[in-house]
Length: 192
Image (cartoon, rainbow, N blue to C red; front, side, top):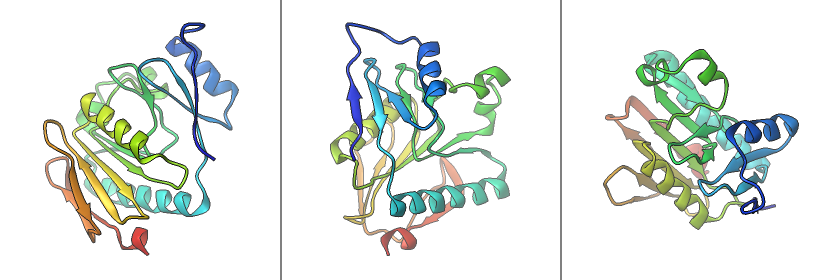
């Protein structure tokens, strides 16, 4: 199954509150929304991708519990980016000093903040071109570091503001001291 894009414009332009209500009324469905207002019904992942996503998220949670540098989010968290797109990366992390600037109300809703870091794990139902466009959108909206991992090709694309996309073939680990101090992601479980 692939994601479905529903064209609403020019018939309807959802407000942030209406988007939230659609999500609440359909808790079994994962939605995103483009900056242009298109509603995206995100396809569920298969078992292998879901397992890999859980492992990746756990690695970030363990690191973050040890360092206490920020807050980790899973793929069910929807962020409102500065361009008003509503996106749910597979893994996201926000530095504590940025997260605590939000009010409790802002944190309980879809946070209007770009994560410092995002990770997208390409699943068989994902389009590479769409995932790459999403990664560019993240960086254009304030994300400082993004990793797009393709388990089939064993390739990682690294996204940073103002820099060309870095391509890594079959790396054993990923790290970035500037954004994720002390974090090292072992990719062997994803590649096997």
